[in-house]
Image (cartoon, rainbow, N blue to C red; front, side, top):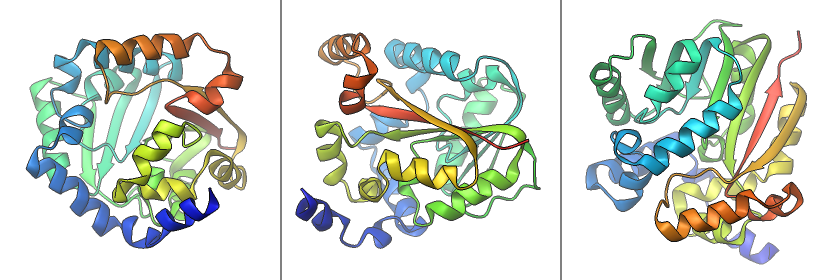
Length: 255
């Protein structure tokens, strides 16, 4: 197992550099690959009822009350902005890809989302003042970064006291997810960032850090996938720790 991990971790820094990540995602965008169409397409939320249902259920569980200011780090095309904007008075999204941000702006205009704003920025150097946000949201972002520690520090810096950071990351204890991520170079950062490592990093700065498994995913929405997810959702957490697609980590900044 360790030999396999070491093989795929080779050149990890190269594959998690912001320039490599930007190039990889923009190539998916320009080529219109199946991965892009299933995970980031601008009309994914509007056109796919299963994706819409899953995102709405996820956000309902994460945001139990309306948030004044929310920062979405690595927002990509912002295909879920229509839903996310309902849970905050002001939504700010950042991403390194100007191509993705162009689509995010189009979504904001097309759906008349008046409380959403986007700009280009690195996660490790946020262009915001200290204590600017009540919540920071990172949806499958951290494992794509070369300097995860710096990104967490920046997240902590821009959060207000008692603010929350909500992170969603792939669960590599799931064998299928592990293999899927191993063979995609732009995803290999996850091999150096298992859940216990990420929890440890957050506990260095945040209080009340906890995580829970989630079956949430938007890539597979066919009848068989929906049947499998329905089965997984009924399992106890002790089994979901190994079978869930992702996990949610929530960390609070000390008051």
